[in-house]
Image (cartoon, rainbow, N blue to C red; front, side):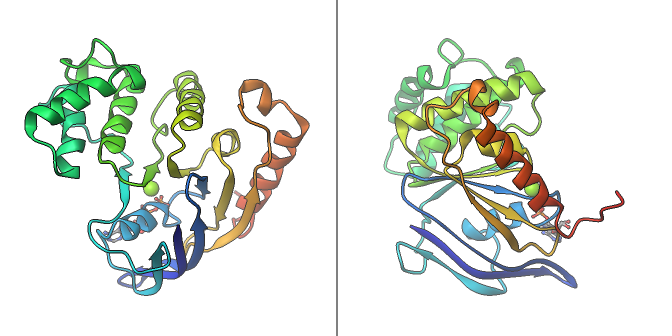
Length: 250
Ligand SMILES: Nc1ncnc2c1ncn2[C@@H]1O[C@H](COP(=O)(O)OP(=O)(O)O)[C@@H](O)[C@H]1O
Ligand SMILES: [Mg+2]
């Protein structure tokens, strides 16, 4: 459904992406794992059309993307508007999608609250929420855009470890029900193993794909899944792939 071929990007003299190729099928959960600064967020800004690529191509269902692109992007910082309530933030997703009046957008936003564990918090402003709730609200706003594919950029990166685990399990459950097409950027090996159908590993900048891994662990997955020999083996392989090209003396 999404195919990226030999994507290249530089900022001035800084080469950020040096020929990245990958594909994502409908309903698939794909993670992109890579060290900080290797160009992961840049890849998303090219997929959404915010930044132009310097080379290579993007195909959506076999053709160059038309506007609006079928990708809803959840940026690396949660970027909820502090002056809007939770409901108004989510409603913004529906407003961006177009075709919804203000009132309908609000009603639809309110209807989404239980799915995202935010029932009773529609009128709350983001700064009164826990970090985990803010990320769920930001994800709800992303889903509300009604696009085929969700691009999630380190959605749990700023959370404490316990909350992060809770939200990873929660996302796994909700994905199993909704079957969105998801591309998840992360530098958390365990998160990628827990959630993905497939994982691409990017090497250090300039980013290239240094490995592609199928995750054949049975679903539904839980904490116990991570303790299985197959999961442990995959984690080791991923960590080894991540170290390729890294300075081994670090
Ligand atoms: N708009 C920009 N202008 C100049 N340099 C940028 C810009 N955006 C990102 N970069 C640089 O590109 C590199 C990759 O950034 P980024 O894609 O955010 O990495 P990642 O998300 O993998 O941590 C970094 O060195 C960053 O400083
Ligand atoms: Mg980033």
